[in-house]
Amino acid sequence: MNESRSNIIDSAVSEAVQAQVDAIPLEDINVAQPELFRDNTMWPYFERLRNEDPVHYCKDSRFGPYWSVTKYKDIMTVEMDHKTYSSDTANGGITIEDDNLGLGVEMFIALDPPQTRRAAQSGQPDGFPGKPRPNGGDHPQPYP
Image 1 (cartoon, helix red, strand yellow):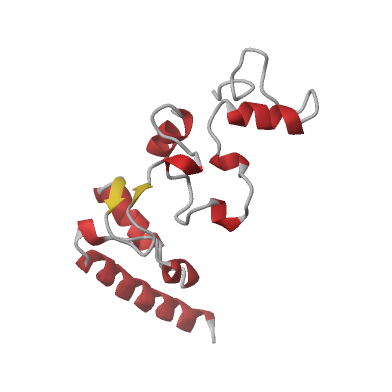
Image 2 (tube, one colour):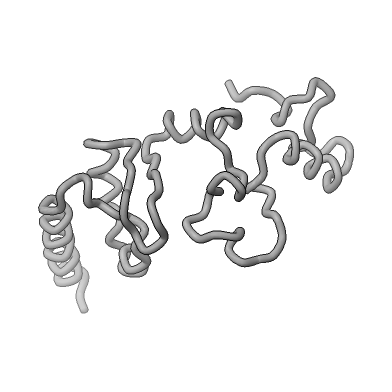
């Protein structure tokens, strides 16, 4: 298929997907659908959420209810405030499926401080850039 024909097809598919996304009531948007990622059609969904409902609650999905946080500043707020927003599996975790994806072990990313600090200290040699500092912080220095 030549490039111009491919672009026309991609454009038509994009327009069809966009029309579909625009027709869904905002409260019914559910981005936890594997086929969206398989077909690479998730982008208009996330764009709409970023524009209209950046912290979106999906009340009904095959995985149960969940929150989608779609803007960088909001994501960073959630990531840095472990007292308010937990990554721990016992509190809902970070995956849409339970039990750390069935791995049978705790994933570092699904731990909250102080467990992250202990895990990092046990597995990192001294001087490693990600090793916690003696001041007790989880990050060597705040990012500028």
